[in-house]
Image 1 (cartoon, rainbow, N blue to C red):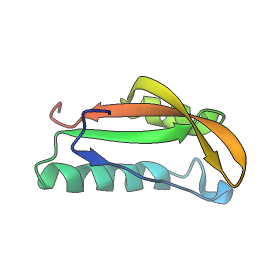
Image 2: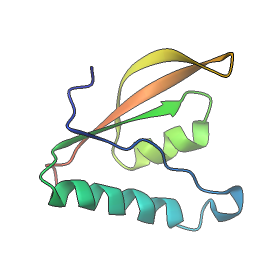
Image 3: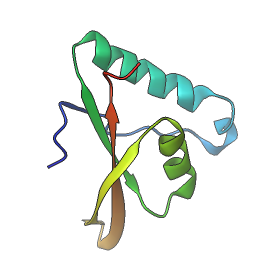
Image 4: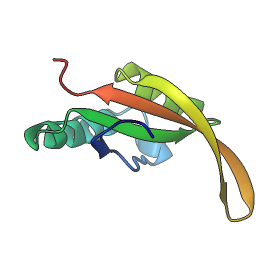
Length: 89
């Protein structure tokens, strides 16, 4: 539904490493791998309540395109979709 050709399915950093740059390094590595494999548009979903992650993904140039609800272990969550144009340098 996002009109993408690749997806970052998860990026998790332990609290003790938040702010050290490891998240940016992981994110940039994944993006560079996608670019090397001729991918042009990456998507990812983020739980709406995770404001730190949302701010991180926005700082990396993500454009919020839609929201949806999902259920996990009997609990409902809201997710935000971000899309990245990997062709922009």
